Amino acid sequence: MTADHIAGHLRPDGHPPGGVRDSADVQVEQHRLPRTYAAFAALPDASVEQSAAVAQLLALHGHAVDNADAELLAQVFVDPPALDPAASPSHHTVNTEVKRIPGGLAAWSRLVTIAGDGSVASADVIDLLTETPDGWRVG
Image (cartoon, rainbow, N blue to C red; front, side, top):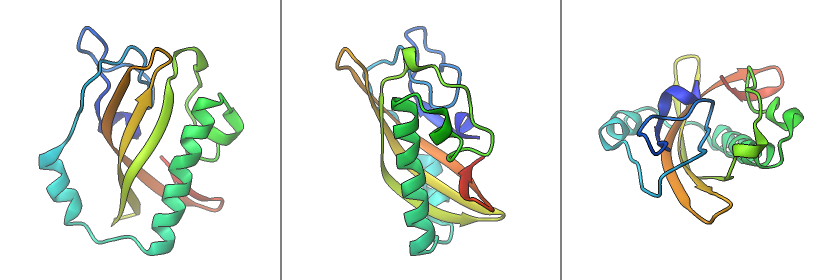
């Protein structure tokens, strides 16, 4: 569900790249969703425990993608995407805010990527999370 809620990370031709959080060929620019944030901010806050679990989960996403670790990625997503380690810059998820929504949680984060050539891109990302028997998962 992440791919539908990503703002930014455009390829040079202006089209979003395919795949969940795929940021190959990014342009160096900032992307924000200010109008959407007001609606998000009005949602009820998640508990401290839920927020901590989601922050840990999103940190695990970065480690899974950056290390091309499919086993770790399976701990992040309900339906894990395929990994393409060749086109993946370093991922950093920061400034995460977690809210309660019907049937789960929503997490608004800033995704910062650093490519091998040193170029940097960022995006606002909203992840929808579902509680599973194994814990929270993006999905």
